[in-house]
Length: 220
Length: 80
Image (cartoon, each protein chain N blue to C red):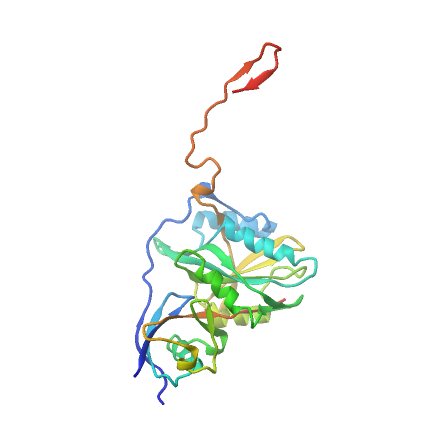
């Protein structure tokens, strides 16, 4: 029996597209003072990671749900990569997870949980790339442990790949990436799509206010 | 008769077309694709739709068919 034969390989073409506009993005509320200062500088230079509000909330809520029991959580970030001028950036549109095998200092997908994870991938509703992963350090702060670094090197070594670390106890978050083999903090923005605005697609009319005979104002 | 499948790397979007025999195992597919992309085969799992394809199974046992699309999914591990 011969091993499988690789006949042909193809890479994706990275499309040119503008990142989410500044009026629809902001810093994560859990950034520390130092990261927030860095964010403001990076905003003007061009960010390389944009996380949708939906994905941000799913990651945060996942971490918060297990904060009291001090259990780590983890998931994969789904999105795509684009180019804007010379810079490549990643968009995280959603996240997926499944049952976990976790403790206060370790996490991985439960060996029996993959089919649930795959169902979420099938139901994502868009073409995706796995642009990174997230996990929590409940009460331990946001850093990349030796296990995390090994995961990043083994699985997420491209520049567009990111690792999000959340500490739900201290309400802190940081992003990291590998830059030529060195782990670095990555500045990122949370963005929201236009349709997520409660007023998108509607015109807002000024309410007419009139007084009734008793002098009590009522709205029409 | 050999089968042809497409394996997609979910992290990069890259794909490879592979020719398989029914006796090849799922592990062989993961090793072949991971080797092509210079990745550590042990850090990935392979899916066909919602199903996990288990390493020791042969292609025939796993029900892999000609023209199937398979996807290599990272299996990360976090520590605190």
